[in-house]
Image 1 (spheres, rainbow, N blue to C red):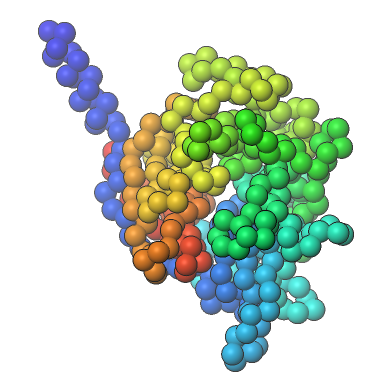
Image 2: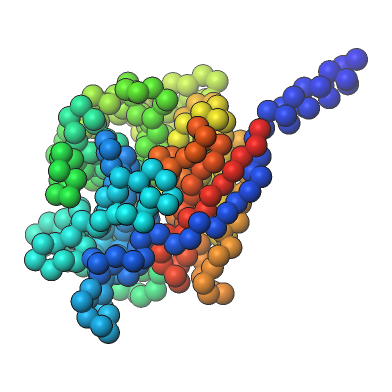
Length: 362
């Protein structure tokens, strides 16, 4: 009898676990533009009212009116705005540009004294609809002069804010901690940095935001989490770190007590976590290191535990030696309450966002 009951429970769990039934190549994004953009990194998206802000890091620029399309430089971040909520609609967008040159501009500007060796990469964000203000976690990166795709070191993560009432004029101001520091989470061995993703619940007006962090331990990226009341996002003293277990979540103001997020690991510092109504939980989407795989995991709560439900391939590489990274979902493009989701990643050689359309079955 006990064996039969155990088999019944196992079958019930299997029936309830969603599975991926199709992955479609939906093409490259934003390649045809008049802003000189010839390649982008990262690719976070953030709805801001009726429009969506897409944010990119380390953007290459070509002269837009030059028939030879000569290289004119790069910016360490930029953004575009679109009103699209479908893949097809993403053909209509506009990069935020410098009026003097027509080229894509930085939306997290460099400060005086910061040269091209200082990179400011966007991360997860949140839009305060009442105040029409957008908050963005960002990473400060320093190039090391060695050349190649890994020629940088992380210095830490911070928080920035911008008025979103006129989306084309968005420019982020870096916010200081309550103690006056620019970096909210300085990078050091054994310490996590936060801002890789911002998680909110299914409520129209959530009381708290949950911010995913990452800690590198023994060469592996481990997920961490901190929460903050939405009303206090700009106050570092209001942040509380997940320090309990999935069954008994506790929160502490001391970052040294932060516990690992069970089942959330191996992501290369970028990911998405969003509530999926069809799946009935929080769906985490991220590249598995810099491999050709993207992992999809589900949890009942933002703090886990996450259980892997699928790993899909990102096989549309332009070159044999390319690697793929920056996998994440864009929930505003989901169809049928999340039965169909849209995922992007970046190919290191092609250096554009590649879109995948992923369909689930329960």
